[in-house]
Length: 233
Length: 233
DNA sequence: ATTATAATTTAGGCGCACCTAATCAGCGAG
DNA sequence: CTCGCTGATTAGGTGCGCCTAAATTATAAT
Image 1 (tube, rainbow over the protein chains, first blue to last red):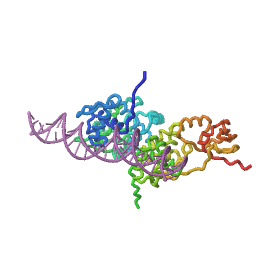
Image 2 (spheres, rainbow over the protein chains, first blue to last red; image 1 turned 120 degrees about the vertical axis):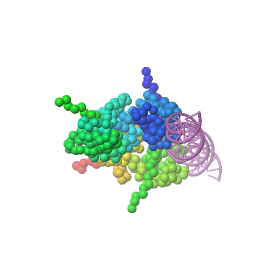
Image 3 (cartoon, protein in one colour; image 1 turned 90 degrees about the horizontal axis):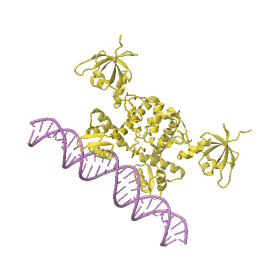
Image 4 (cartoon, rainbow over the protein chains, first blue to last red; image 1 turned 120 degrees about the horizontal axis):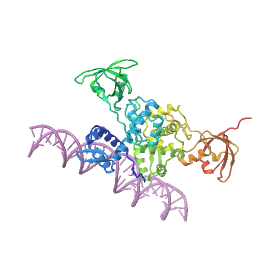
């Protein structure tokens, strides 16, 4: 039985669209034209045109004026890009000394150019990591994506101990600022105070060094954490 | 004094053309339309069109019906691509276990996607190598290219000792075959016999292991060597 | 139910990079 | 000196991926 998976080689742009649509779907069912346009910084009519091409290639289902949803083959392509992007970011950080705030654009360009073989060689050299430097899960070569249940720091009740597990890789300034607070993926802290009315959150890093930091509500909303259960004493 | 070097960001295609033209110029003064078309596997009219664009951007001087020559800025861009390509090949071979016969296409795609920063980080990780795995000299970041005077194996007189210093990276089959003979860049051997009328060359590798090999004239013409002066005894 | 507004699509255009077919320039041979 | 060949260019066409402006559809508000 031949796997006839005709793959007419996606263009760079198509790859970008599929990845963006995949990420938008994760937020809310259908991906809408405007949302895609915003994500890719193009005008809405450009999106309409591209959706036409992509749906003609069977990569997505397009309900005009409604939105768009990836087909199995579209999702596979998107996950392939996601794997590439995240392996690349991890490789650049661990093997070439990039900072976590500067890898994103580099990976964004390289993900269209690397071969599957190179990606797998990098993954191997890294020991097949499961998360990238920002805590995003890396899809398996076969396209399985392990999604972890996390809670935003802004929602962690005072008194709990938590570990930073994930944040967006998009904003370098934000990443630099977060790092300057002593926060990195894997760092644990205790939530001392969570002020009401979208107020700031005060945490104490479980050092070294042990430091207190105050974090605005909006920023805390983008810091995804795992709550560490208290020791049964 | 501001270096106003307006760089309108070359397209991938432009980069390929400039690199090809640079290499053709090295062979014989002017690069001709057909030669460029052959090198890039496109039709001659496509080349005419691109030459028009490139000469409008001041990257080359085009004498219609005659040929084409890079300007200083075109040469700079070409050398930049050459550096990228060769650093990439070296990196892939030394850090990611690629074979010397399979790196070329990977580098060919990546050279358009990597940033200057990434190239320099790779170069640094490699200890700023001066030659790539096929012995091609790597241009400096500033664009200086050190050309070494070499002689084809087919022209090395019998009795001389020589070292393989360079060969083309284009043909994977050839590279695999050459490797199977025990030849690599840096390997030394003695020329035992050079048969006339474009006949084969017989060499003895200065082991280990010490082996004799017979190499056809045409292949020998593509193996560039340095002749090692005899010890003054 | 109608109307205003916001989202989306169609219409029409542009530049790049390719193609084939047809034309034109340069050059050596007779 | 002209013919004919080779090589280069122009002419004209295609698809991609973007744009703006105009039309269309969906939806929320009156």
